[in-house]
Length: 179
Image (cartoon, rainbow, N blue to C red; front, side, top):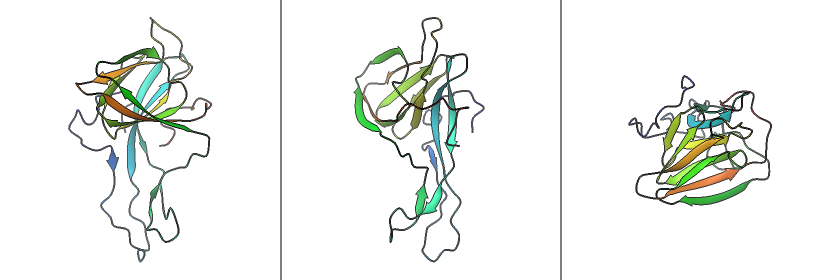
């Protein structure tokens, strides 16, 4: 878990994975499940003063169960039961999104290329394929020409992102709601 301050992406620091999964094999004859995994993600959120921040979080609530009868058990996170919109977006090389809020709470999953998110507190995070972020910076207040976050591509290839947009939700009491 981080100290609450955004840092460079784990890929930039040499860590190749955002998922920590124990090296245990599931077997129907096992009486106990292996240790649960943790999945890291960035959480972009708005504080009570209307300023956006980013925090590195870890999902840790997983159940070891079968997703379908007769399927081997696997780790499953919390399910969301709501109307969602899923789309793929391609950010061209050199694209800068200017300052804006996420249109609604959404998971952002880079599929290829790299992109960055800069929050109002000045923290800049770069992410590549497989690094998760959750955009929940709705309700920001403009300060010094900034509102929400600034985002754009990094490098010489487009960034391909998958967005999973959720219905508007009440603001989380604190960042890292899935920890």
